[in-house]
Amino acid sequence: MAKIFYSMAGEGRGHAVRVRTLVEHLRHEHELVLFAPDDAYDFLMKSYGADNAVENVQLVRIEGLKFRYTGGKLDLFKSIWCGLKYAGFELPSIVNGLFKQIESERPDLCISDFDPALPRAARRAGVPLMSLDHQHVLLAYDLRGLPLLLRRYAWWMSWSVRAYYGRGKYAAVTSSFYTPPLKSGFEHVRQVGPMLRDDLAAMTPSNGGYLLSYLRPSTPACVLESLGTCGFDVRIYGLDERPRDGRLSFHAIDERAFVEDLAGCAALVSAAGNQLLGEALFLGKPVFAIPEELHHEQRINACFLKQMGAGDWVTLERFTAAPLLRFLSRLDEYRANTAPLAGRLNGTQDALAAINSLLANLG
Image (cartoon, rainbow, N blue to C red):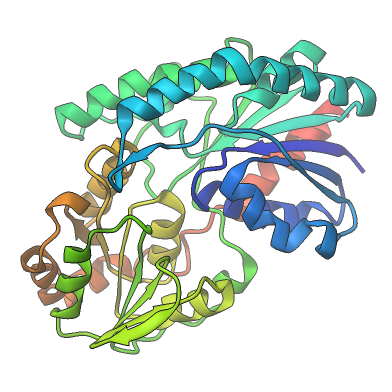
């Protein structure tokens, strides 16, 4: 049995979903300590918190980077400024604390899903490191098929990925629903599909004739107005439970209910996070993606979604009924394009194989 320290970014649910999926497989053979900030900690509390203790898994809260919003919109410059303050004032003490814990407990491996603290502590302590995230797409993937603006963003953000993990050698696994060629010099990066939890992977997809939508609390009212006139019943998560509004029903976050609704929907209308898009495509569901204008990483995901013929997209700020109706008029075409992915786009076993292979080589 190996001891693994595993950290992650805390914004949104994608990082924590990936981590929990792998932990549920790893915990039967290994001891894991999870370091989670913000949303990720809140998500994992339901599975591994003090009231839901699981053998071989310990959950620890740490401070992490967060996106900043102004007037309900992503504020890129404020997010960058707060990130710089975090790096200068908070990160050093977090790294020192993790370093002391590593020195005390001597884990066999440290894994990071785009958290900057644990990789620094692991390097200082001389413990092997693995990156297992989606953000290495920006560093290792050949993105020449993207628009110029997004290529420039990817190049710029690739330096953040380098800064997170440092210059030394480490094992790299990238989870994504798309797999363009790797750039020269990054042939060592292992490409795997989205990590899908067992309950989702076991679902039998059907078409219940409704749309499923996962929205941020800051979603403008005009988006709901457009959804309400699209001609479908729409089941909405992320805006809390509230009274029904015409054909719109609002549901509290419930993982099991959401998975069942995803398996039974006609299509997904959602932000463009890699994890959720991967889950939808695994179930053969067309996607209309609505990334925020300044959330360039999600816009990259949306571009690949469209290139794959699995759906379409428009930025949240430009969302109207017209592009949504065009998407809905082509659902049969999108379903045909997602059919080859259905039941196959699952990187969980490949990611586990990469972890266990590294642990075996360490031994």
